[in-house]
Image (cartoon, rainbow, N blue to C red; front, side, top):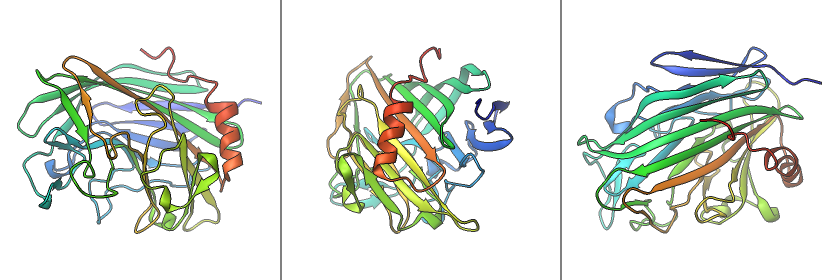
Length: 310
């Protein structure tokens, strides 16, 4: 039996939208219209299950720089590509003139065959002072899975444009305990607060903050309609520091982020490239650890969705 038909459309200079049998699964805004304080960067929002229920949150009042699902890094040397204030050792959070921008340059590929869709994007990371710090090639590929789920594969290749090494860190590497956020970050709907956190190895609970795991999942409940959904991040075996550490909370809000620079700075030498790959899976109900392992083992890990995207 064939699965839902994927349709990808582009609004030039704005966003790419992906639909499955008429249901909008996500909108990828690649030219955001956000203030500099929010470190403008592309983001996926809204993100929905295959039956159309929302599983992301955009620009919440508590952290207006949180944008659905996005790649955001708070500590790239002295520059902030996350948004908001910057944590400064021994001083706390400070409003600095260091909020950078991830600027879209072009799509080198945008394609779909009905069962799979994807794109390749070139970006440049520019500091608030105008320095081009990093070149990026970003790849995204999407397909549906058995059982009413769907998968987004994401890779980023960050190339050092400086004449000196680039150092990636976090507020924790600057002295704030258990604040190692930075990476492919998801902010969940407010109804997901106090949901269930699961990880590989049969582990669970908010104490997974800062722990290493091959995958981490968040199970939340919906407002307005009955039921739940599960979002899963899977680390890639070729990523540096695999299995990655994780930044995760179930209160005061739901969020999840593979955090390869959680408590250790990573230094990228001059003219070298850092590549990170993740899978993001949206399930239509509350999954347990065994179900997640089965989906990853049978449908995700054996298939490289990004192969062939250039």
